[in-house]
Length: 222
Length: 253
Length: 42
Image (cartoon, rainbow over all chains, first blue to last red; front, side, top):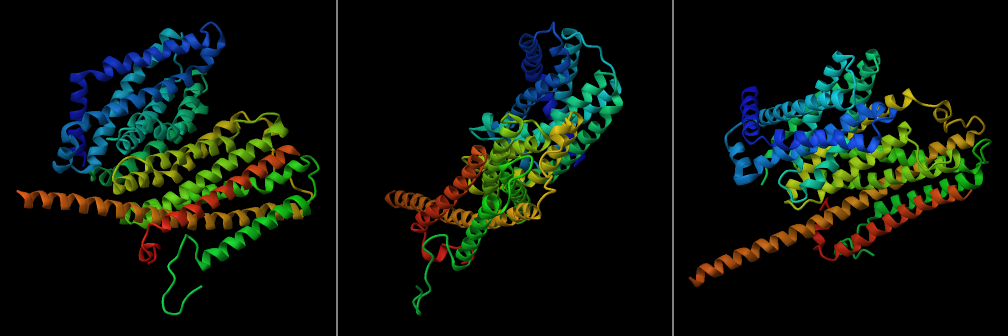
């Protein structure tokens, strides 16, 4: 299963490296969001600073929707999905591969956004340990849910509206937990934030597990 | 109604058993209304508003019950791919959505005179709102333009995730809102110290609404089954027509 | 209290309407389905 996962992940990441869709369109979009938030929320007052963790993660969620649509649109054309199935790859492995590729792309975007937050919102980064750990757990969870719900909405005409409607409520706990963790870290009291990390880790494990188990039955269809 | 030689075919979704269930449910609700409005006194602090609290928790309970049934049925569908499990899940989710919406309405309406606002972001209401979104998502997915097996299987995955999602959402919202909870909001509704009858009525509300839920579930399931039959017949007909076309075309050649 | 009646009223009305719509749909659909296939149990 892990060998298959590595194959799929490598394929997806290679496609990304060549086409540069995430780098070329999604990243700028993420930075654009940061700029828009600043326009909306008056960077001179305390509002933007107080809202930074929340805005960061809301931004990540928007980016996720785009990234998930991208990761499944590359499979959509020319019976690629059938080719995947016929290639005899284990579905759990396919899930893990797509999950990993998506997680990597999201992680890159988050890093850039973090840099953006430091530069544009003039925030110092404290509690790096908690920031990194909760980001990691959150990204794993978001990528897992995104991969799973992405395939649920794949190949449909209504995909663009259905995917966010399915995925975003599911990610509400991640948004809540990650924001609180970031708040604790940035405010200098990381000890408050670690319980949220636990929640994020549980979320990630649940979704990775269910993803591996159910991906098979979702791929085997017309 | 039944002739001795031929068993009657049902002409709707009713049956002797469900008619009994329906009447019992109706009577139970009537009793609830009587208890809520006539038999119980006004509350010392909340006045007449407490009468909504005989309805609201029961509605919430049926919403969560619906989730449980939907998840169990979805797991079954993923294992065995039967029509019945999909129908059960779908029916349960639909009724659950109705109950969740009503939970939000009654909660909101209760809150308006109490706190002066139509909505507060307290743990319970917020979790319930997210639950409604999850259920609506399931229903939206079930309506996609795809073959029935595809629809059912994809929906089943969403259904399977309902209970885990509810738990995760509830936990995160709970922790989040109790960080900043004001004392007045925390001690909201259940101080019925005064009257045993009020306590009884509230618990009885669960019973009455469970009966209504059960009746609705059976009806919705049967409607779903009939819809499935109609769709299958339509598909069969379409296939037969295509075949006839193809054969006719071959013969002509 | 008006709000209380509002809450109860909406709830009872919605439940009743939903129930009636189910029964009506059931009757309507049954006409299109042959008798032996009308029940899951048959």
